[in-house]
Length: 257
Length: 265
Image (cartoon, helix red, strand yellow):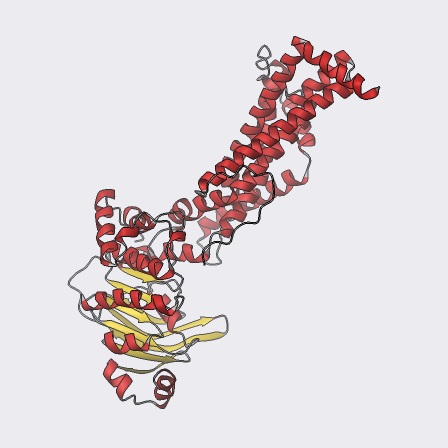
């Protein structure tokens, strides 16, 4: 069964594209995720907020199996990805990720960073891969830096390249793990701008962030997590204007005076 | 005067064409065997590093454990034994082992100057010896590549082999170039111990000349100068290579210590 099955190459799946049920994750004896369930529809931008240590990043990393959940179920396009026979790398082709620390390859220039995954993982031919990489670098405004080394560009630029790299894989979903947390305030704007564009174009995104303004403006759905549980889910209007839970109000009051 | 006597001896040795030829042959032998040892050791050392770094998880399937455990054990034992014994002893053991099987390196290519059977034996030993050290250098280099880049590659859907070939190994080798170069310099000097199995290298030639001319001090001074020349040359070439790789302008004052400039910020 563990062959090059393109199990995820299906277009006529029904929403939700991702559905998570009763997800639990323990690190040794520490319960990081206690009981997490939510769904993501195609084209939605879901923003997950919550204080540090609430399990947001762990939850996100479970979706592309960088962490294996202890129990529960995750379905992608209706297929249970926790099934042992599912090829993990086939899933990761479809679910890209953008990290807090950029995670670009230092031995390649900007353009090569966006090509390598396409040629080696998707087996696209080099010319096609280059064209797609250039298109995506243009989209994130990094085309004039395409021949730069990674050490020669700023943090905000690195993160935009990382987004271009993720986009170049033509994924169905992009996961963002605190993409602006390692950036100084001047650079946060350029990255959020690119993400806003993507959301507008209908890319399915799950974003873990502390940028409340971004969540309020862009999110179709906001999830507030605390202590391994989802405390409250709603539209950005519901969460930011009339949060139901006391804990949500307390959390938001620290961000919004 | 003692010193002027020695310089006279150096002069008279260098005036003899036969001796100069022998020294030049020794130089060639030393340079070639050091290069073979370093490059061969690097190549096999990469595989040794893979062996020592094999990851075996508790829930790995049994057929993976069947080859991974012995391979990792073998790589580790090899590395410990080779690094824990002198190359001179390794050379003699190697010679005796082959004699046991009836192979005498005296009889291989015995009419070829320098690159004869003993040179072949010496090359094999220096490669096997350097491999153990290169393995450690590559392991350190691989460990030095940030976990974040490996995670980034995983998230793209790359498998372990692709991550190694395209992301971690190129960086490990590039970052280790100063240490790998140091190994070349060590090999230039340490190949002298291979005189115990009659490899035609500088020290072996010096011993021969000393035995014929009885001018011990003079010939050892000459080859000391030769070794110094070779190591200085190697140092300079390596510095230029690493400066080129870092895209820096070549700074000719490379024998001085200079404070590395802080990057970025």
